[in-house]
Each structure stands twice: as structure tokens, then as C-alpha cells.
Length: 436
Image (cartoon, rainbow, N blue to C red; front, side, top):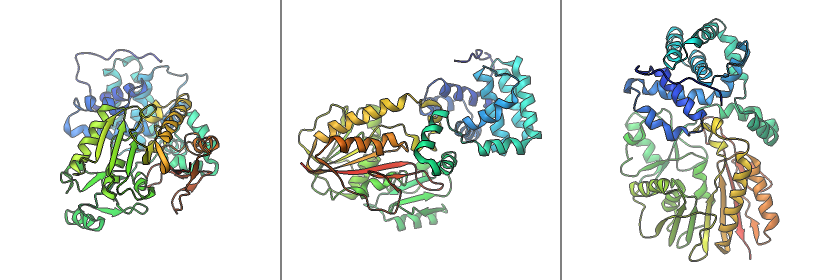
């Protein structure tokens, strides 16, 4: 790990220094979700929008900003704190409307506040050069694929001709998408309610219950939130319920269920006799409880169980199992840009093995004639198509039920959706029936 000096004490850190501290926490292996709330408490209300934009934007452009910076240094800095200050400065100059003089002075001041006064001149010189050569710098940023090298190689191998478009999509901001709770309100009615409130939104193209908000808004303040009129869920994740057989009167297991989007959607669409929402993360299962309660869906048919999907056994065979398997989450990088820094090449083989173990265990819980829907939010073939090829090769009692659809890309088994501007994230679906 590159060396960085302790923070200067006894001083109130400026906004850029707060941003740098958050980015350093992510570089040191902490997820953004785990540090964001704590770090946000120090930021004043008026600065929170900018703080958010700088943190998420720098993570989104991290490897591209690195590509811009490296040629500007006579020798590598070997100092992650100063490099992070440079990325924050360059991001402001190339990707925001922050005035250049403010971006430079505030970032140089942050470098000093964080105990790196001796290198603040380097930061100042590079940022000033960026204001003189903005077009060239921006050009490098735009052309960069913006991925860690291991992921670049995997995606290039997996998606060949589609890779350039895919790397562009992964650098964009994902839309804010709602799933309307049709037990309470139709999509058309909800669009009218939003229009009456002066909120611009439009219907999703693939999901029949999805709505995209055309502006970023505070979700709990939207009409119908407290009454359970909608949930926040990606458009491509909303397709899950459309790929299931009729679940009325059936026993269903939602494996790896937290935070409960798919559980809720099943209950909005069908009336199962019994539904088990299983997850090993007790904290995240609380979200399932809260979401079902808000949506007025929690009743005696639903059991929320803390358990490990690798070993957990059902009391009876299930008619249907929804397996949203643990994965690298590369398909949702737009929403979680810290994945670019946190995910490592060595993680993938471990994840693939975990998926295999869960698949084996869940397959044993499914009755003959039952359906298992395998899902990931990954775009790596080894977690999706290849996982399924291996599964079918070793399970004579498994038969694929082809997904006939106009969305996504047909694979050897299953269908793959890639992230798209203004549309959903990267998701994979494969439908399997137990034949013996």
C-alpha cells in the first residue's frame, strides 16, 4: 500500500478533503455504503450534493482519471493521498461546472490540510496545466475504458464487438427506476399522479410495471411512498416476476432474498400458499421486513428466515425457487462505482464456486416438475452462461425452459441483459425445470 501522511489535526477539513478521505477509505477496502453515512454527517447540508457528485463521479471515472494523470508525472508519486487529490481536482475541471479557480484552490488547500503541503505544488501545477489543455485531457478521459485491467481483459474476451459500447455504458449514471405496486395503483394512474405533482417521468420500455424518473428526487417524499404505492427497483431486475410460472397456491423459496425487491414483486403478482425469503445477512433481512410492511404485503404466508443458502434445508420440496445468486455485481457498477476499486480478479473464482454450491443445495430442495430461476446482476460469462453450461452438463434431471423474449442477448443457456443508457443494469436470467 502506498504511503500517505496522517491528516493535519486541529483544523476543520474543507469539502475536497472530506471527499478525499472517503475515497481513501474505499481504496483501503471499505465499501462506499459502509462509510458514506458516517462521512456525510461531517458535511454541511448545502455541500452534500457536491460531496455526493465528487465521490461518485471520481469512483466512476477512477481508472480514466489515472490514465490522464500518469503521463503528467515525471515519476510515479507512490502516494495515494496526493494521487486522490489530483483525481478530485481533475474530475472537477473536466466533468463538472465548478469554476476552475475554485476547483484548483480548494483542492490544493485540501492537499495541505491532509498533511501533504510539500506536494501541494505538484497538485497545483498539474491542475493549472489541465485548465490550459482541457480539450486534450478531456479527450483522453472520454476514450479511456475506465476499467481495472483484469476486468477490461475479461469483458473484452466475453463481449468482443460489444465491448466498446459496454465500457461506455458502464461509465454512465444509471436511471432512477420505480416498480409500481399494481395491487394499489396502475402504472398509468401513477404516472398521472406524478404529472399532477409536476414530477417528470416516463414508462419503462421492457418492464410493464416500471417507471423512470427523469430527475433525481428524494424517494420518501414522492407521492404514495408511505402508502406502499411503489418500490425502487432497476428495470431489468423487474423482469424476474414475468419469468416465473403461475405461483398462486404454490410453495416458493426466494433464496438470497435481501433486500426483498423480488420477494415483494412476487407477492404483488401472485398469491403463493407459502413464501420463504431466505438470506444469511440478518441486517439486510430487516430491509425485507420493512419493505413488505410498507407495501402492506407481509402476512402469514411469508416467512423471513436467516440461513445460509449453501446448507439450508426446506421442510418440504418447493414448487419454485428464485435464486438471485451472489455475484461480482459487475452489471450494477453504474449504481455502485466503488466496485471498480473493491472487486479483485481473485474474487471471481471464489464467487463462481459459491454459486455452484448454492445451486446444488437449492436444486435438491426443488420438487420434480418445479422451476428454478437463476439470476445474477453480473455480465461475466463465467458467472452466468458458463455456470449454466456446467450445471446442465452435470444434471441429467435439468432442462432449460427457453426464455422467448425480445430483450437481452440469447446465450448458450439463458439470456443476458447489458446495461443501457436510460435503461436497466446488467442482468442474467436462466429458467430451469426439474424433470426427474
